[in-house]
Image (cartoon, rainbow over the protein chains, first blue to last red):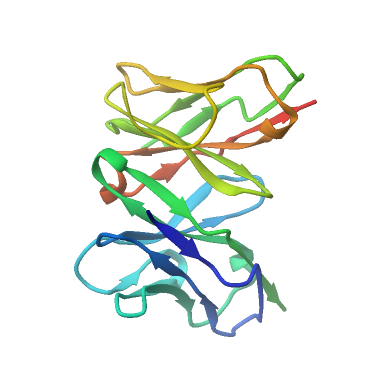
Length: 114
Length: 113
């Protein structure tokens, strides 16, 4: 079975500050890992994904995440927050094949203070 | 290219009724998945269809069903609606499943009164 833990439900940062959203996963097999962002009244937009290969993954809008197998983590970072980054962020772990599905964390709401 | 299209965007139904939601995936994508999003339970997997066959199913009652057509378009049906079925229902399409990643639609907001 897979699971995702996103500690805390809300993170607040100042504009221009570092954004760090934490994600830990549990998976019995090498996982596929994803970060999605959701703006109010919208669907999920893919920020980045880890499948295989390089452990530092760069995504859209300046976000990146590092896959650390030893720590079972896939934390999302952005060097400098913008007001437009305010949204809800979801980390997800996936299995492929016959059990293909995504298991999501509870999500973290990011607020950006001017 | 066009994204994932879900219709309708909003629905209001009465308890006991049934509802059908529609999803048109990205052209060429063969996998369509459905998720339910609620404030209390978060995002939960309903089922996945691949080339017209249900490939995987989540832990939802039999009132929730779906199907996929030969053009990959998918429908989800919920019968005998309950108040707790009020949620945002999201459809996601993929070329082949998790390894390719999923593109989500904007969702259908279902309210059961």
